[in-house]
Length: 171
Ligand code: GDP
Ligand code: MG
Image (cartoon, rainbow, N blue to C red; front, top):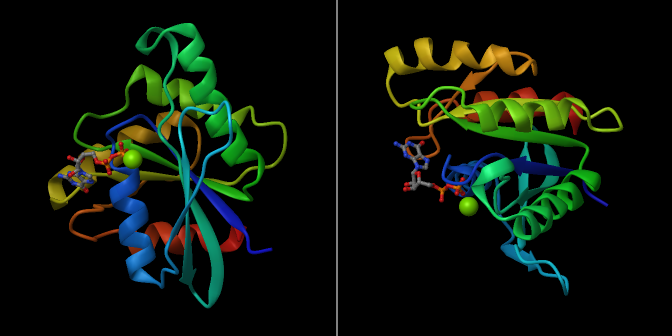
């Protein structure tokens, strides 16, 4: 089986845009949607190649915490992200460099740090199109405690190669 990388983060931070860009950057063999009964959010699987390695990325629907959704819905979404993470050898945590770190980013960071087995995480600070934004915005995400945050833009494509390079040791 090819290694799998789960892409997690709050809704709207640009996970799907980034996954599509990453799969463009390498090669895509089409998206496969796995939707199990009783699971509300699909996980979208896309094949990619980078640095001579084949792997699969799972684009999750987004991770919500606390007051952002009612308890039942929240549980289902967490279940979905947990399913993706449990079959992955690494994760990309996507955050929004324009907004800076939010409380929910920190909760997701803690959730990943507490993952019951070794799970390398690359923090992708998305929406960093401008050099100034990159320098200022990305550094703030050190506080997530998941290593060096990497500025990137799924829309413009800058930094995406660096995120993939950072993943390579884990896949
Ligand atoms: P997801 O919910 O995390 O999958 O986020 P999407 O990929 O659907 O993107 C959410 C919104 O952010 C869309 O309006 C995108 O066009 C926008 N977006 C995504 N990536 C970028 C980026 O790198 N820069 C900017 N400026 N906007 C982005
Ligand atoms: Mg999405």
